[in-house]
Length: 254
Image 1 (cartoon, rainbow, N blue to C red):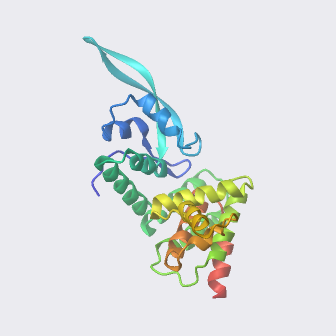
Image 2 (spheres, helix red, strand yellow; image 1 turned 135 degrees about the vertical axis):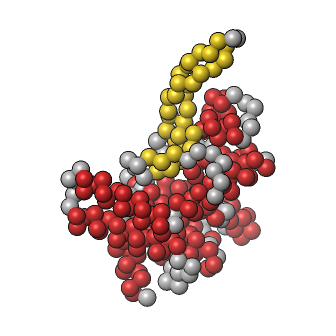
Image 3 (cartoon, rainbow, N blue to C red; image 1 turned 180 degrees about the vertical axis):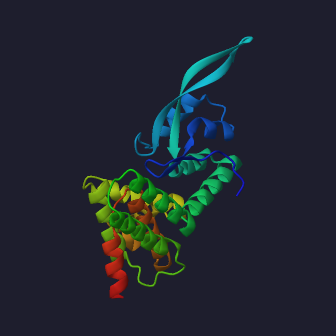
């Protein structure tokens, strides 16, 4: 895959990111970066969750002189970068969004996941943190989750399991805030698979005249359930939330 823009990798938290300024330049946006980024943040992006501020020293031309100045950049998560590209509503935005989707797909291949898991285990062992048994368990958990993410069919996948995973994610990564967990799940589902559950709920209420919203997962078609399950598992993986017991129990019961 040809690299359209540099992808940065932080081994500390196992996250991929991209420079906001480099994306701004690559998309050919004429609005100054600080104004553009401030306006983009009005769509609900949060520091520490969707991006992190980053100070860089850049050389800028001032007349005939090169002057080094400190500028504020931002490291964007790949999901945020994808959403920014879609918001541009032009061919370049579409091109870069497709590129980031491919980056995510490559990031979640069995080979890539295992390689990162092994590097993580090696660092733990070298630093004498944890035990060999714990590292093996970490690799096993990642391997089992990856089999799920990369499988072609998930005959045992259902809405009950997705609900349980999102609730576990709420407790492990959202301080028990179930509303936030579902918001993140729906956001990821929209930008990974273009499944807009909020839009479907609104349409259902308008068509039926009801005031009580339907259950969120009832808005999924049966064919979309596997993608929704993969999305929920990915959220837990990114939030370091262990759901191996949920997956193993469900898979065994079927």
